[in-house]
Length: 265
Image 1 (spheres, rainbow, N blue to C red):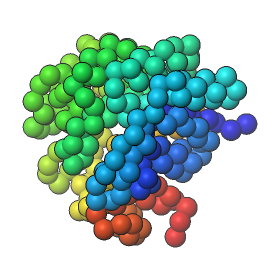
Image 2 (image 1 turned 90 degrees about the horizontal axis):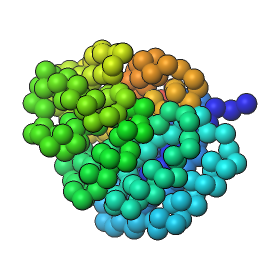
Image 3 (image 1 turned 90 degrees about the vertical axis):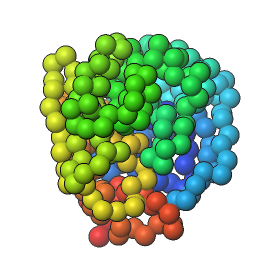
Image 4 (image 1 turned 120 degrees about the horizontal axis):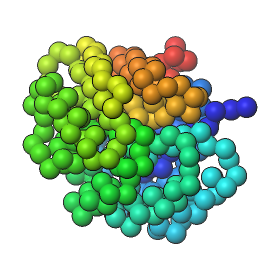
């Protein structure tokens, strides 16, 4: 019997982030992936040239089709966009009893806003309380709290602790947007508090790291791992995927990480 995870997110035609990165991450970690596409983007390793939002009726139909037939063990939520899409997803998964990982896709690694300000309140109110784990990067945590970006490790941890007051159950503060030779993440909940560190890799090929990280954690939860072990395994796997990223040579801009570093020579 296969372990199954569902991703609800946008499509990346370049294959490095979004739905494509999620499914690759699930597969790399031994989990069967299902998908619900919320938006179609035209993008490559250099830029995004077009975005088409999927109607909420089709988003709801996709979710219902999967959940009414397939035994999904965990759900990852990524790019949603407008408030009506957030409401649609929240309503559609209201009866789902498994773990939900929310990657609040608001700000890309290049600094582009990916979630309109009017949708931030809807995300806070409808999905943060439903998430078993929230995985913001530094700019996204700042937006959710209405604060400036964390400037150091102490700020990162402090913001994670404050995000727990927003009714989410656990927060993984991702430090990839930070500076310095060491990349630091903080895992914080009412029961857990620990730091994850890794040497910062000198590579431009980090497209899709956030999507892949949250999906790798979702894969672990789908297998029945506890949250701490799922996060630690995902962190180590992602680090190796970044270490091996330059081997792929995809595109002329910011290429993807190597999701299948454990399988491809």
